[in-house]
Image (cartoon, rainbow, N blue to C red; front, side, top):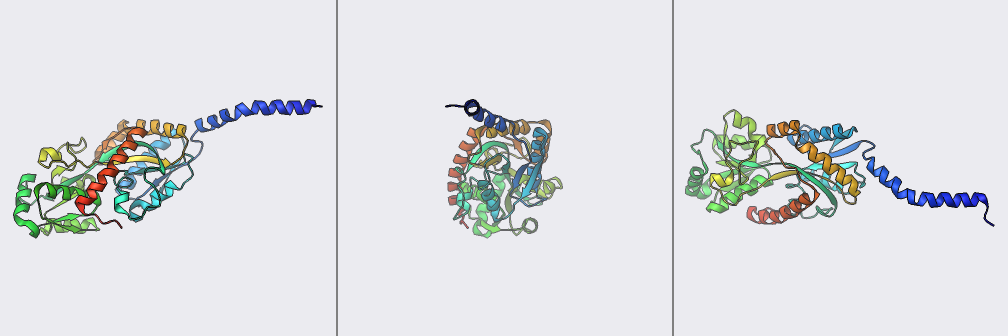
Length: 327
């Protein structure tokens, strides 16, 4: 015999069954309901840290929730990247990072990775891109790339160039390969020593990121001969694109992007994609990027995934050209 209490309980259970997915969907729609962690692979106070904090603050303004930046520097970004890959896939841990020089380049820079740069993340969207530029001492006689190239061809292995980061090394080696240059690389760990040697004439040129070089360029200590992208960038319109300057097949964009752990719910990823693309083109964002030598690069998850796959393939070739040894 079925009692009235049992019948009511059964009816409640039937009602609750269809309601559970609805409640779950509602819970995800309410995202975010609490604070978010933005993981930064750089130390506090660095130029890249400033960029991460800018986007984190914009995300906080958009969502009305606090976004706390956690700096997990070390191992050339691997510590931060692995941490995000292993985090709970709930949308409350996000990675704002230079995807081109971290996720895409990682398989060529490291012998062993404890994560898969493509499979262990949901790729939200691109944000912006910058680049490295070819610089010489402003007191040098080199006013353009052909003049520099002619000098380096004459000097052969008696000329030297400075490198401090993989994208700059790759750009320099592509430049060398296009003109058969024998210029010898000198590695630096610290920017001050790099510039001291450039200004003293120990090295002849360097490829370094435009924001790092900006103060010295403005003060008249450096001269920029070409940006390492095929065309000119909007944020540094006075620097010729590589193609215009006479360096063919050089087009290296250092793009920034947003990622979350794999299996983060699709609706949360979609919401983050919309928010970050709104941020990417807001007037104060454009002003910030312009001051930091970067151009906006709004996109979507499909575009970012395709870009990541393509640049991962590109880095295989870059590693060969630059003779990069994985660590």
